[in-house]
Image (cartoon, rainbow, N blue to C red; front, side):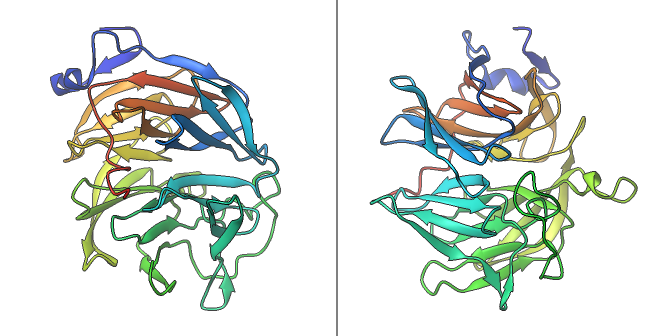
Length: 306
């Protein structure tokens, strides 16, 4: 077992290959976030939220600038047509990059009031876009533009793919951040990192919600508290295991929340995504850098693409 791993449960060894080693690819960012794999290009995009830009990295081309400035872009995902959908702190919106490169604002208001600063998002197989809306882009000028909140809380939203209607999926959160569906999409996992703002009563947990009729959330239960640090972004593999960010690396949880082990990373981790031709490469954004590691685990986030 290499020095980059901590085994807490023998099942953790099932995700490792003999050659599984953490590799630092590039370190261009102030705060790296929002990695998303582009299957058709064999490339990964990731945001530099505080640097107000998006980078692109591929084996063939190395590191290039994808968008600069980028409206303080944070989380990214692909929709059913393979288009990039993004959370923009600067414009306080969810946007979509069209095939011709133009950018369409999909949602920036709820009930006539501006959103806080959409942070992370996931696209369900029916095309619905689910996203979190904490205040981190409006509490200062480092990740957006300081402004007063117009909505009464920080919720999880669902954007309907047909009508464009924006609805609140749950208010049972304080500071929602990363989110991901279970492989069968019956559960939505949501990170709550409110400990940052509320040290006494805040949370550092991932909560599991039942997805009701494909459109709303119910029956919340705590999956796990994440320590050290807080859960930010995370992904789920085809076996239902959760790969979550933390202060010491990627923590791997069983579907019941049991900590299986850790992939240690020398910088504070913000997010991750599966990529590669077989979706068995985990790309990790951590503070200034992009890392990768090949595993036996395979991601689920691109199985809905047409």
